[in-house]
Length: 325
Length: 283
Image (cartoon, rainbow over all chains, first blue to last red; front, side, top):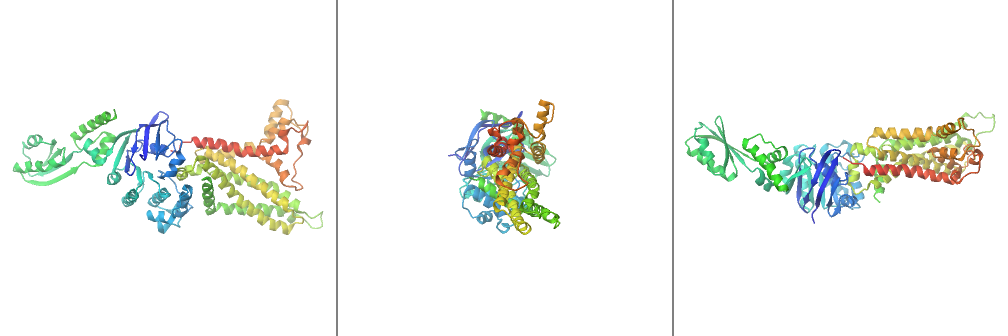
């Protein structure tokens, strides 16, 4: 059984299609990163999964329960870290977690859950004075109550410093290793690249891509860029390199020759060819395409770093349309 | 059944705030303090010394008004406050239905009103026993029960408003509006209708049945009728309905029917509040 499936799930607010005909599948046991810029429809989707917002049309199930008509059953079996939540300022961390445990009818020890998010030493402090990071972790401890099979985390790293975000990732990975499926949303790519098995990318209310990260890179924009700084740039170097197998673009900027190769393994022959032309190589830099670039390409259709990439972005959109049909 | 956890958490939250203790002090002031006034004003030798009934009837109006206001103040933020702070996302992210939230909030907040009321009456009992002769235990307990019912009704109305709206400001406006129209100024409504129909003001007797019925649809009026069945204190009894009417007393003006109206004041606002809350989009 898949952890989450949605079937043409849509939500309109007035004239705005916040989520349009979403078909999402989250497999049991995976960490699924739900990506997209702010306003792409991620939160609306999660709000529909949680029963906060009813869908306009379409349907879906979470751990086998209908998200619209069996919402309490859905929330009984999952753990939720909501977006933009507020804590009960006067209640202690332990009371928060105990409330979650009691509501779920579970029998966890609140202190165990707090220890898992490294809040054990502040269990008796009221949550009103907690930092954003501590509040996020407290909410995560509440989400862990009742050992849910699925965690739905809406922007779990929002408001966290890099260190806090790293800790959050470590906890997520740990929970996944216990066998919990994790579905989390983010608009920050580096959060996702490190830990996700698969990602889905939202743009303007639509899921424009869904795959493993490596496959996405291969499919869309897997070029690597090599920048070689030379003492002198010979006139014939551009045509020489452009005709090489696997080279998709060559640009010269002063003494820098920038070569885009479709496949990282083509970098070595390019360097050899430059060296063979008799000039001295002063420096070599390599920019591998990151998920960040891929994300920018997919969600904005722009990638200002090279002419070639812009074309690629257009192709990407084309590819996506084809994939949709 | 998860409403019980919502109610318990809600009460625990209030315990941590100063609110509960402020309200307790207020209730002690009203029940013990105001009921002492007739004794404090009494000059020995001038007329009979005030007794238990004098203390009680003197305190009655203050006490009932104080509890209705406390009920509204305690209730109006119950749900909309959590919507504004974002903690509603915890409530609704956990396996609570929206009905659990409304029911739990009513019970939690009703307890927040009930505890200071009981404390006020306990301290009041000591003071009243010390000051007055003729302490009637059943009437005192009857008055306490009556006070708790008042608290429940006004808390329900306020929580219903709280469930219906999406900002605290609207909740304040709604609660204030309901209090003014259906409580403080409600007496004017049957009077205004009467004037429109008859072009004269009604007297205090020979009233048509509809007049007394409209009057009794306010929040306080049916409670006032019920006070007569719960307490037997000189000075608190209500004017008999039969004496005010032109004809026989129809069933809907009999005392038992006031219970129906009181229950309706709990159920109907909460029904509307739940309906609106259940359809509210949390985004």
